[in-house]
Image 1 (tube, one colour):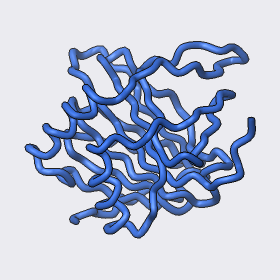
Image 2 (tube, rainbow, N blue to C red):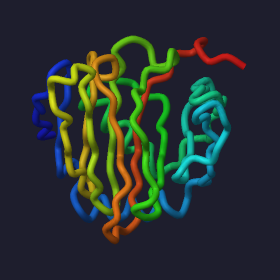
Image 3 (cartoon, helix red, strand yellow):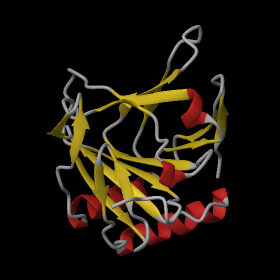
Image 4 (cartoon, one colour):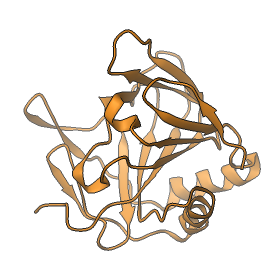
Amino acid sequence: MSLQAIALVGTELAFDPHWLAEAEADVLYHQVLGELPWEVHRIRMFGHQVNSPRLSCWIGDAQARYRYSGTQFEPHPWPRCLLPVRDRLARELGVAFNSVLANRYRNGRDAMGWHRDDEPELGLRPTIASLSLGAARRFRLKPNNVAHPPLSLELPHGSLLVMRGDTQTNTRHALPCTARPVAERINLTFRCIKPGFAKD
């Protein structure tokens, strides 16, 4: 593993642009693209339930129920193709991930707005491991302290970004729309859900 620290005030970030070899990333991309039960998740925006601007799939252990933007998500079972990735991340990061949110960005119009991953189910100071597959997209992190400029980071095929510590408390992050032609991208964010926090 060759994760390198990224300097941004109030965060604990590490990045490896080649965490998966290109051939491994190619295989995993096509497996995930074809095997996951992709859905349009309903999310709350400005007081209304709307379709999210991407396809998604929530995967995890049976108890890894997750509440996001006013909607309760029950996990789909782990597909076989993601088990070696989960196990490698556990070995290298020392975190027993029990869930993963897969997001599929079909084109440059699909995006993720500014947010922080601070739901109660994630616990305090969560570790989130974000694996990117497919087309490279620009990821942005914005410190709460406006005196510090946002960080822009290109996330290529097979790259891994790890967010730890107070990152979710001190920053927000986003994957903006882009007007340039861009192929599909899949993002896998591995998480550890704390049982008992999710509410019906």
